[in-house]
Image (cartoon, rainbow, N blue to C red; front, side, top):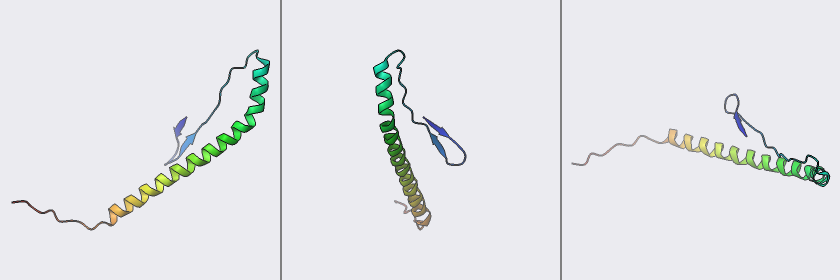
Length: 78
């Protein structure tokens, strides 16, 4: 889930829901898998952050290029 925060910030919420009511084996498996999921979440969020930051940097570079462009004359076609 993505939530816009203050000035250019976005809060990302990543979750895993499971329904293990009354299923002892599923509860056990859930407890065993949870640490691995945590590692995957952390790596996934780091990758997402790096990707978004690189897109932002590219956007900033492009904006600077546009601002630095010399004005061009428009030629009239007779």
